Image (cartoon, rainbow, N blue to C red; front, side, top):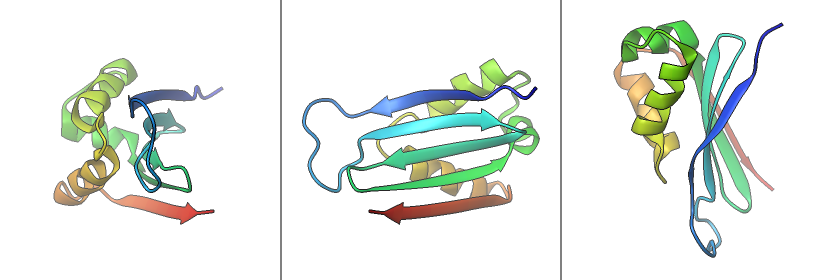
Length: 100
């Protein structure tokens, strides 16, 4: 059975203004890595192949990968930085976003 690993890598402190990012989350599942962000009314996510990302980041375990994700993308702009990193390193990625 494939393990699902998820970690909140950044969260805002105090009251959140409309449109501001509340949380950034990293997930590893089924050989995919995703970085997502949520506001009070919307969310978006970017995901890519785990093996390709681990190779690019030069990490060899899921624990090391999660630590690297938090270090690189654990801030308010984490989703945008992750998406740009994947693009800059020619890592094929998928993304989605929406609001309610």
